[in-house]
Image (spheres, rainbow, N blue to C red):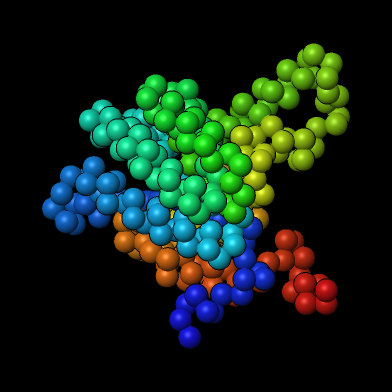
Length: 248
């Protein structure tokens, strides 16, 4: 039985989030510069996206560029932005063929103008697709997103649109940039690092976390399948005890 056949499609995580890590180290091992690693990672993005969609996953969120990544060398950042524009242009047809909607979260206004326009064009073209929603986290940081949500709520209270005592988890969640999606049930991080790196901090409160030593450019569908199989083998208690879960 291959890995795909071991997956129970009735128990899929609705939302999978991936911290795509290891491009630079992968390139270094090959004797190339970091940008080579970023270019070589496109196959992994395509495999993960198509693999998730074919299984029936509803939401896939990829951590593509963090707010902290702006601190990297200017030449690398510029190359990443050019690669982003080129990749979105080339892959939009694939998204359409696979009925996948493209969304983006983060401080998109900080992206170069050509990145913003290409991203907006692709999101507009795919907005009616329904098979799966692929979200790119670009210039994204969870802390910044939560601060923005808090500011929105504070303004609503100030304007008399909201009573402070009515603020709860649902109200707060609805102000986050991820409000359109279910909360992630499975978070995958590649490259062997065991950190969350300011990614979806609020949303992953009860996500199962799967770490793999594989560097992102080498990540393929079977690696996604292994993560899902691992997820399906876990007991998700949400604060309860095993006996309560098993008695349902």
